[in-house]
Image 1 (tube, helix red, strand yellow):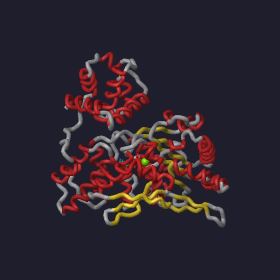
Image 2: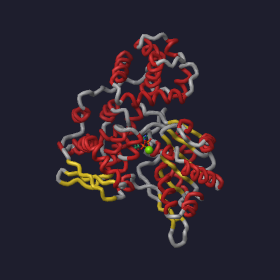
Image 3: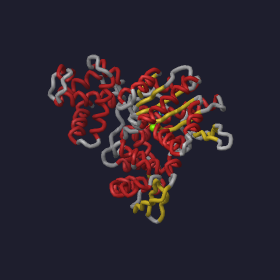
Image 4: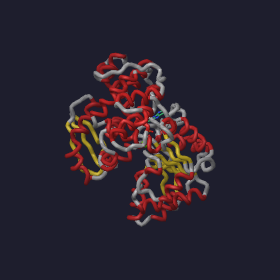
Length: 443
Ligand code: ADP
Ligand code: MG
């Protein structure tokens, strides 16, 4: 049930804004499913009425799609600690209440290892840096800052560092937590007047892994504590690794001195996985479930679903369908799960970026010089951002290279454009149409 709920949450994350997901949806947990009734709990009972009112249909639809049923949802306001279970086994470090010394209690997602991580152009830099840090924490890149969109493998890579370092040195003091958990812990420590324990716990670590660190932006008191923690850990030659959905300079409201700390280490972007990488990841996931997925079928799925989390979701749906209908996993089954818009497996991706630039210009009736110019009017800026998007996502050109292709633009500008189009794509039909039109011309 936890796996199911995690899959549903991953899907919901793609349907709402980040803020809504973090504040509301991610607080929900699935308590039970009995007689077509799914009971949803929440670790913040105050939220539950609001979520029920606003997101009932969305949650129901998503849950139904994975369970292949027509469930009635009941929202239960009783406090649960579902969140902790959902997050799966993670690293924690507890303080022994008698002696006041930290006790390490190592748990983490056993599948998130380097062995299970597939490497390709979009993530090889991040992989290289992560392995370097894992083999010699505190000595190579410190801090290591990994950023990228949803599902590109940030959490996986970060936990792999934890696994590896811990295998090498089992006395290693390490903590894995999310920016949100870090924040909550500080707030709790203040409430319970246990800040000295908090300090003790965090400030003498060998390895601190903070996932989704953007969460602490704008929370000045938390940032202050984080800053001190950061300094203390670096002083004892401990390693810090952070992930975020955007580069440090784009995390608004992040204090300047923190930002410059992040940039003092190594900052690496992980791009969206291309078709080959998606296929490889899917094969790894199948193997973990002891399913023998033929490579052609993996390719068919990977060519139709671009987001890794969605891809895992669709794969699970295929498995469920196969079980329910008691049929083999084959072409036909996959196509029926994918629905009517099945794309065939693409020919090897060797599109020339220059060709994409030409086609985008002609599609929008712009001169090349207009498309490449710095003019900010919407009639130029939007096609330009669509171009960034296609070069990054469709052709797999790294952000830096796109910047150079277009006359020396900063990679953060490119990233901004790619994000904007990705976001618009889920709601804006005109943009969906434009992208389809351009892709038709391309292929
Ligand atoms: P993020 O934290 O960037 O949102 P995750 O680390 O949660 O992404 O990855 C989403 C899913 O995709 C996980 O199940 C993860 O194991 C898988 N995944 C992502 N990238 C890779 C990869 N390169 N190799 C293997 N699995 C991957
Ligand atoms: Mg993550």
